Length: 462
Length: 131
Ligand SMILES: Nc1ncnc2c1ncn2[C@@H]1O[C@H](COP(=O)(O)OP(=O)(O)O)[C@@H](O)[C@H]1O
Ligand SMILES: [Mg+2]
Image (cartoon, rainbow over all chains, first blue to last red; front, side, top):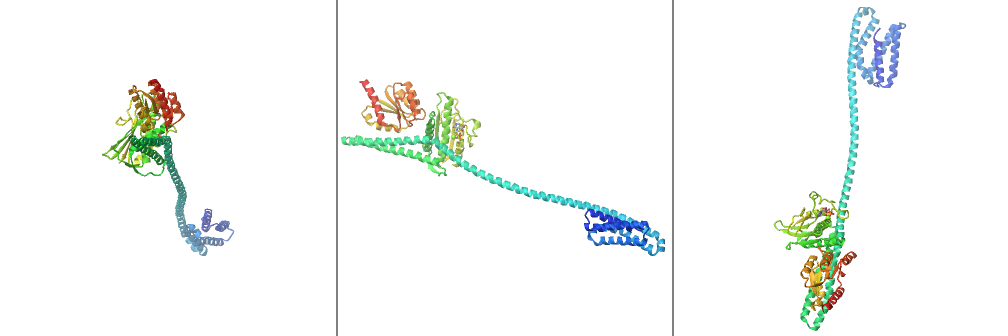
């Protein structure tokens, strides 16, 4: 018998396997199954010898031709084509052999061996082709797997990329939100700072009110007293006119004139204090005006002293001024520099009062001095506020200018005084420095044992 | 009859001189001034013989306060009456002053009518003794 049936079986079997791997559409399942049944039936029939050999051969050839035809004409079988090529010589040899066997049995018998050899080579060909086919198929599969893997990787990177994009978007949104929150916080901080500065101003104004009351009351008393006494003097003057004592009349007139000057002087003193108080509480930016530093220092020294006195009856300290009388007026914002002086003087009074309470020996004389001088070479005015208090420990000196640093009990210190003072002096192009323990010098308090003393030095350009 | 007035406000001198102009002119009183507690003590120590009869002192002064001065005066010159003058008519200052032996307690602005009454009392008290 020929190889047609075997080859047909192999083809069909092969196609069936491809059905399983979905390389071939499902609609071919039935034809392939039928084909297999037919092949197997043909083989059984051929083996049994019941049916005419010729007919079976013919059917087998028909079947294999039909299969080969279909494989070549339908693109879905392109994968099996190479297998068909491999088998083609064998099919051809088998066909020719069958034809000769049937048509020229004599000829066939003599050339029988040739057909056998041809069959053998066709078979070798088939095997060789099959092996290369398998190899190719394997390579293809590997390629395919690689491609699939690449596809998979691509998918993964794609999803990763998408996820990353989402992440980035999320992070960006978060950052934007954070930025907005920070901006808001900054705004709030700024307004809190402004409020703090304002409340520090108000707190120091509160400290001042008692001093202000005293400082206004005193000149007002003088105004009242001097105007009253002037009225009395005028009455006396009338009497003296009547009695004709012109010398006395002249003397009284002179006194009245002097009294009117005093009234004017004390009136302006009160006026200045009220103006200063208004300036001090004002939150808007102050304007620079030519200012007499000595007058400003004197005013705030008195305000501070009387303020502290009125608040704390046990408080007392001596204060002295040592002013350079020929100071030129300098261009400053008076209420700002006034605040600096007030802070420094208040601190100094606090320090000496503290020392007085601690020392408890009657020898200690709490004393605060304000000294002004001029450095003509460098065109500077120097204001020194000195005390004979406990001084400032070395390790604390850097910290005192920091906002909120205070060693005072709550309610007595905000810790803002020096930091604000520093900023104000800096804004005026000047310098604020501290010396502690204080060196003794002209116009500074004398120190005795146990008193380190502190000097704050404000330098302002002329 | 010598009086000492202690106040850190210098214009007080002028005011007292004018208010007591007549009394000064007719020689019934003589005024001395000190502008701090220390100065007052110095004057007192030097002029003991000149016999200051009466002292008026402000309370609110830098350095030595009027109350501290009062304390020191009372220790050294217990026979001389001292009256206090204060800008604050508060109970605390008043009680402290009386406790330390102040004779009178005047509140600023000074009512010179009352002050003169006080002065005349002193003068009258002293004059019969002299005679
Ligand atoms: N003259 C001084 N002598 C001793 N210590 C001082 C003096 N001035 C300032 N200090 C110290 O510096 C700190 C900060 O001062 P400041 O900024 O004015 O705030 P505050 O007075 O509200 O405490 C004070 O608490 C005090 O410890
Ligand atoms: Mg302070």
